[in-house]
Length: 107
Image (cartoon, rainbow, N blue to C red; front, side):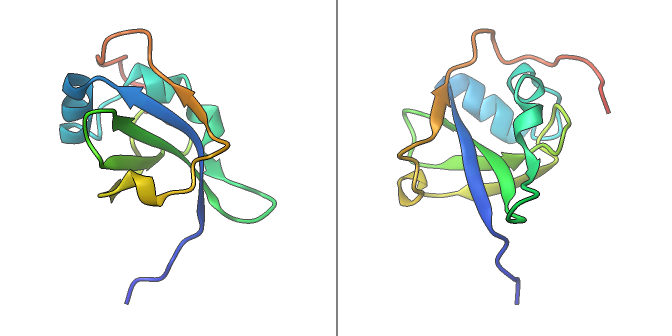
């Protein structure tokens, strides 16, 4: 049996459908939107919850929770089949300005 790990979504990043498909097929690739938000992820020192980004696109119901843990790739990821099941009322939303592309090695 797998245990439950508490998490909190700290930001939602909406990609285009093409960017989302590319990202979901290449989770180990460095991407600018994870590099730009890596300081937001990790473990919350106050409650031990994983601080995650929710990566999604408007055209689909699913999403990917990412804790990059300070890296520019999806170091830890979880597939969310229905992102509407998550409580996102007070979460910041963002749309990356640049196209989805590799940003170079950082690991």
